[in-house]
Image (cartoon, rainbow, N blue to C red; front, side, top):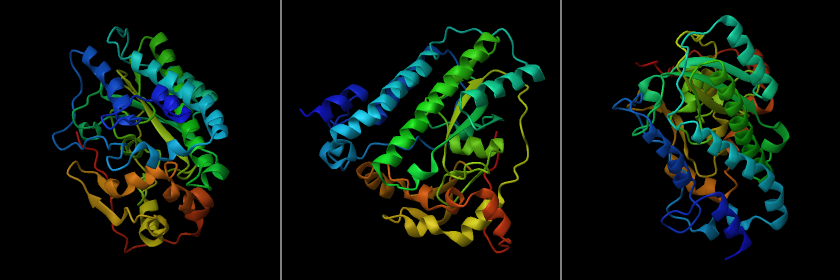
Length: 341
């Protein structure tokens, strides 16, 4: 067994095909839900969580098997803390915490947002989680959520697919897990229930929730586009019992899909043509932007790809410049994700 195999066997459990399996690791975290007597359940139409593992690839086909010793030494200080933080997130689902409060004062939200931004979050908003955003066969402890984002470096992400972009994405996930855990501990000390997501994977569709919360809008590549970072961000949630979250009911960002309908640069850039020419409606009320089966193998062979992110004008020249130059597209299809109960 090579050193690479040993390292990834330590970081991630092996699946049935005897190769590192992110899906199996996430399933281990999901088992913590067994500690709850009741959960908020998904809608009948909810989609399953998109799998990460490629059935058609052996470990030797995957980019992880081709990392050099220098690359492994560079990414381990990121991957190991990410694993630790994700396991800490999962342990908060032990079912033992009992909240003392369910409503918060404005000062609490000010303190929470200050803590989040000081820890590295670039934005924070709130949402009541619709059942159709909960993945099939999963569940969440409470129907309310805090949604946070962290930014990824523009220069590193512009090189995708590359080791530098892969390392930056891993760094983003690590920052999400660290910030989410810090916020959850603060919320619990204040008497509220708080259950952070596991940064990647998770129990709900983070992109869907972020759009509902008003952080941005989902582009034709299926990624969230926001004013500050464009597409260069990662999203996480913290589920809570706070019933009076300052939920934003309007979203001023839907115009970006009018631009997407005209641009389609990500569609042309995708090396395996996995991005649909225009989003397709899903049974749960959302949009399906990508054929994940076509995307997955290339993703796992090429450092998690991210070409669609790197090619997006919102990642390159930025949200405000695109908005200033864009004069509108009255013939664009109007795609809105409804906020279903």
